[in-house]
Image (cartoon, rainbow, N blue to C red; front, side, top):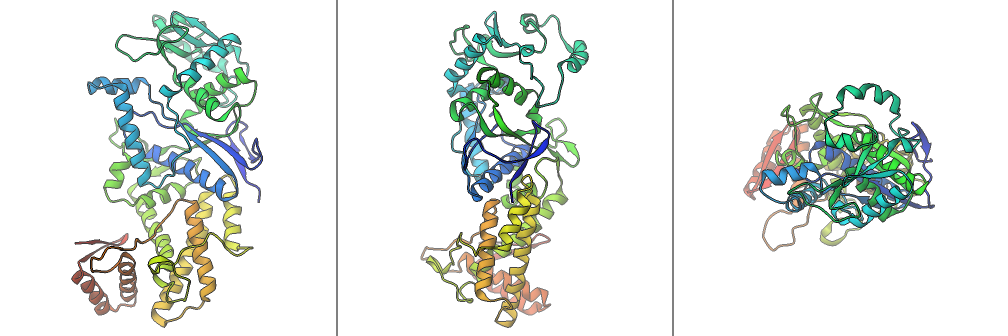
Length: 490
């Protein structure tokens, strides 16, 4: 069961082999911090979070770096609009980023380098490019000479000749920046300071870095010359990642990354998400509507990560229903473990084990599916199979007082579900009430809700109403919808 990945660079699926055995160096091009994160960011962050989790699950030691672009024209424009500073805008939206990601269950990266904190590395890389003949200064700016790098275009598949044919009518010959360049394809590594903008001293004068050089420098500083995985959205393939390759490999003479992985874009009701169309949805807007963060994760993971995904009300409703199924399976041990004679942990909640019988057919099938270019939709089928089997056994236990499957086997199945769900970042664990306030615990409430659900399925509406009234009398309000039953304490 060898892990194989589709490599954007080679345009084929390849066996995964790391630079250093057993270790993965992974870099994800993060966000430009001028606004709240949207659904496209949610998809990318969830995908690469799960990729990292899976690599760790199959035994790799992963060093995961994600950058923040904290100097950019968009940030500067936002600062001007708000009569603020670039640093204040960046800090505010970096804080918001961590808040949003925590709600989605995204594990923090090992390090979050910022462009403004990497200025020495950026200037060192530009200096190296200049010495090797790939960069030239021009009136306070520094440009990369694209035609000097003979492999330019190898990631995107674009050829300069083809791009040249369609570019002539889009070039503004009066543009001062254009006039500084030796060639229209050359791009800025360093930009001379403009009045009122933040600037850093450099050998070429006060200024700030171009966008592309920032990531090349951060990769080099934090992970070295060659990394295993460079990840990002498909919209970054050209020019950003193409330019990263040109900058880094011109200096080191080594591949910047062994594998280039790109996630597909998010559409909303079939259209590209944009503020102008009014379909721009931030993560916090979506979650504040009451959409479960785990349903968002499930929505993302039900699509192959490289393909576009369409966000619709129907799609999120289906993901919500799917999450309820998996969540009910995850609750099985908390609801029925004691009755089945399982070992119990603190607070009478069984503690799931990461150990599972070997061989474990569920684990083996999960890995076989996911090893095919991170086929998370395939992996989810194993989780649904486990969850539905546990739900069925729970129903039998409630009605007949015993299960068809042995308690030991059920415990193994539940622990396997908890483990695999954790690999995908899907978690549902009722909290134990430790205060002295009288009332039902979260676990007891969930058990009552499941009993009521079974009564409704059996058309025993008198019992269903009795359980609802019992909960209401103890300050618990139930809200039934097509997506299941939610509850809250009054």
